[in-house]
Length: 310
Image 1 (tube, rainbow, N blue to C red):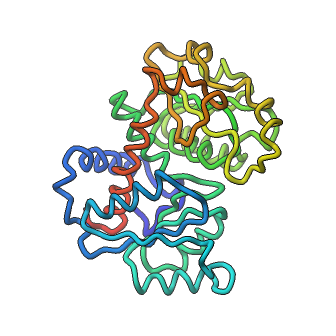
Image 2 (cartoon, rainbow, N blue to C red; image 1 turned 120 degrees about the horizontal axis):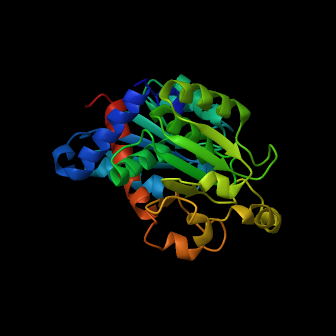
């Protein structure tokens, strides 16, 4: 792996396979790694709120003998009184590894460039690599493979989760079908689509963007959705967006177009009655809390790999 993990375009299929293999081992035998990060310190920079990201990284460090420092940008001079570059250079003198959950993708790239220690993208407005790596681990655990499967994503698709899903699926040879409203405001970034298509050509996967929800879900092995109200969307747009995205709500009828043993996924947080119904997210096909748990195991694997402990 490179020094940092900023985007899935930086990984090969083989590196993703290695991360999944290590995360599975960490999950099965956590005590084997309880001193792996002894005397190591993780700086956790948060601009956007979080439940799973903070808990998984901080708990992961604790379980492996290390320490995590929570750093809230609302009380920080970074990007205001102090430059991102100076923050990165200073922090590198104190800690062994940095993770950041920021609005700006350009800002985390600058943080990584100026830092002498590894930097992990824990979410930006463009990319969410850690989430999708843990999702791929979860699919692998449930299905026993990744290559040759089909994942359908429904809803708001011009966001970090969709972008990283497209790249991740294409890299590992999994078909991805994105069902979303028409228009650049709701469809995936064209550059991401182009890159995903290039990866898919090499892996044998298919990348499809459609405005037909049923077409997207047809014969899918996994059905995935995410919030219609990302953190940057103003509250006053909620009613309009509900109307636009309701045809893409994952409900019992839409799930019936997927394979009978299809799994349902949502990276959380989720609102029942919006992007999915309660019947689906609380039903037997839902694996959303398995996804959430695997954030812990995958974050640990990422940190161990970047720090070259394993």
